[in-house]
Image 1 (cartoon, rainbow, N blue to C red):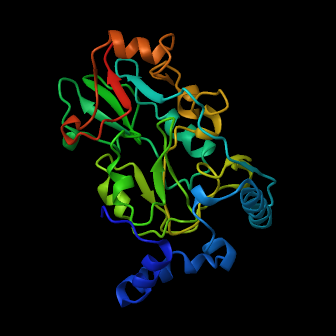
Image 2: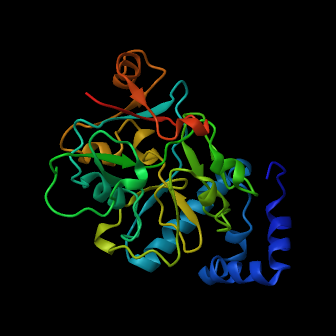
Length: 294
């Protein structure tokens, strides 16, 4: 997978085989993409004029489909900023309000959640024995709660697995996806050790009155069927000076977010003074999502 090929050559080879042709038929073709949309240039090759046309098209399509006026933009990484996330496991009580806020902010089909909260026995970090489907009042005695989402890895295996460069890591540390380039092969999903990528098996179902109109091309615009999507640290918010929606929804203050390059930031203090850990450190993905107790 280290050798990259052009998107068109890859699609040609896919269509050339019967099995792969079935995958294409069930995903992109089913969305009836226009020629211009399907074969548009890679994000890195788009001019400002190209982007304006693409954003206008997405806005028009959303209006026609949902009856909702949306504004699509493309906030760029902020120079001198590298975003990281910290989570205080002593404060997380498993209420899952972060999950709900993420779904609404990022225009997710309600069957998909970028954040999964795992109920764990105190004294263990064995994820295999955790329960992500717990019910009842929280917090429960003898339990703690471990939210897991995209770790925005420094050495992201998902980006290396993509055969057509549809996903990549940007300067501020956020791993993004160009959903018009994603072909739904799911190699990135298989490569992610944190189960942080989600495949759209059907056209997303979102209540029209709950659609977030503030959308970004590389994050929370409504994704089509047949692509793999993921958390982007709410870049439509964080790149304009706001916190991620999950952090704002957390009632216990368990979530911390900011610029690790800023010595005055809260996350800088946490990484310097707290005993932090990351999930699956042995894989050397170098996660930018840190946990700590206390």
